Amino acid sequence: MRLQDKVIIVTGSTTGIGKAIAKRCVREGAKVIIHGLEKELAVETLAEIGAANGVVHIEDLMSPGCPQRLVDLAVKTFGKLDGLVNNAAIIAQGNIQTTDAANFHKILAVNTVIPFLLIQAALPHLTKSRGAVLNIGSVNAYAGEPNLLPYSVSKGALTTLTRNLGDTLHRLNGVRVNQINPGWVLTENEAQRKKAHGLKADWYADLPRVYAPSGRLITPDEIAAAAIYWLADEAGPISGSVVELEQYPFIGRNPPKDPENLPGQKA
Image (cartoon, rainbow, N blue to C red):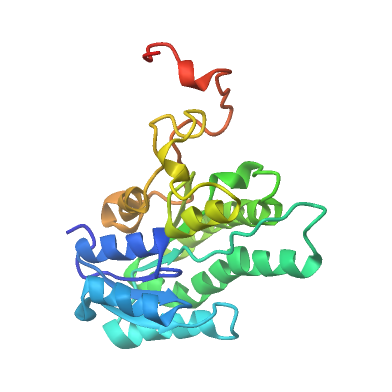
């Protein structure tokens, strides 16, 4: 039990990666705060992990005071706070022609400013427990898809936040701050997004190898398995790290011209 008796907040944990992380935390011995916007999904998640292992908080993170209320709920319910997973994010289409100021500000607020405010609110308690923060970024932080401009910028800013606080908070407060950058993950929302873009219902069943060398996408459970290390004591003093979780070297990658006919593959 790698997280035995730890108390961890996981934002955006009613679906996808956040839900998988929350469930894995409980399997590793932790108590969790389930957060989201959909009460029905939150109740369903709580039922899956067991009512004794978590508590639900339904609120828009943009609501004034929400970060502090999440922290207060964790401490009031379980007496302490050991970990914070900043997973909630807005993933929205947009480029320089289609993104207006209001939308850009909102994406930056939710994806970058809110994680900062949550860390700020949690810091006194994480200092007491010598706890850990795990930010969930994206490989898009390094440039991003053409039509994910504001989202990509927000994840780039989150990376800087992680590296900055990963140094300062570790030195001053004993709190580790790290980040994982998932690549293409088959979440419920991603499956629906691609269908909305006109792809067939099982679009993920037959992907070009240039996008999925293994022949399939990464699952939320596989991201959750990697997340546990950064929340557990076994990570030791490691702080300020940003790790890519993708099927191929994302930076400096040179995709083959014919990815379906790589050397060693059967014709």
